[in-house]
Image 1 (cartoon, rainbow, N blue to C red):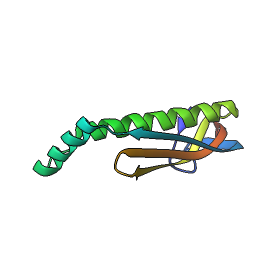
Image 2: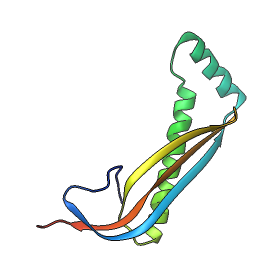
Image 3: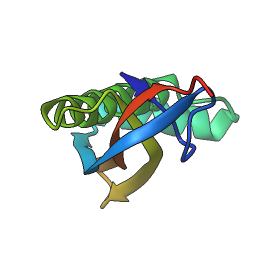
Length: 108
């Protein structure tokens, strides 16, 4: 399954548009991670714990979106956008959406 943030893929032509597909993940934070992140904020470092959680959430939403596209008969998802939101002070939401398509090599 090819995934792209652009609306087209070089070397391929879209032969069928199959619909919008999404993936969602809401992740809770925990006290230890929050404490370590606040220490990083104080000393000016990066928060590895939150970066790891963002990566995990991103993988979840892309996998969910890919699975939904496969069920529609797609072999690619184009125009993907990723949105990140915090819900209160203890939840992180990541949403991905894109257009499920069927592509073929562009032989012209």
